[in-house]
Image (tube, rainbow, N blue to C red; front, side, top):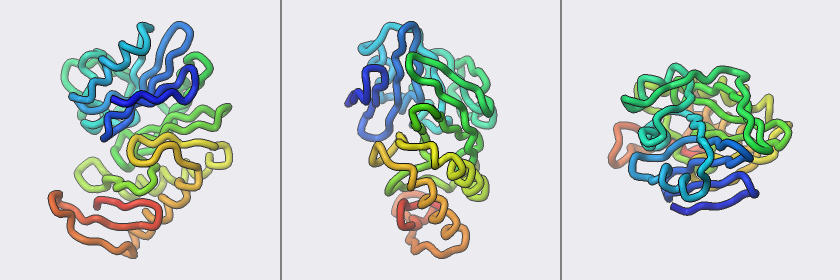
Length: 221
């Protein structure tokens, strides 16, 4: 696990496949996502802080919620609750909820589409958006399977685009990180082109979907 400190409180935990984000404040900590079951996020967090940790999920795909069990509890959008491992206590995330930790103040922004319960976390003062899988450079962004919805994804990107003037930095869960707010508009345009059937595509070699190549990111659709 590679640990990168963005400042004295914010750590990026990267296992080479997916990222989690840890904010260690004065008397508590926030962890955004827990990686795969074998990512060792819990063990890594314990080497960084012994503060009590609240886990927030951007969404509940296995590469984000797979490491939840050692933590015992999480906060997640209700549409993703069925995807969360058994035995984990779940608390609801709602539009406008705010989680304060140290110098950070994270506001919950529901952005369904990649999953029904996808969420972003936005610190307005810092201009920082933690976007999960919904805003990326290069991708691929997964948009196939029963819990994906391209129309919802497009509407969510439009919602994020309305915040873009206040965003300076985006921390995505995959691929290059950090990226700039321009990727919101670029991912939105690629998604609109995907819906319109304008993106060049080819069958995925292993998955039941196509690789659709946009200008800013690819989609698996």
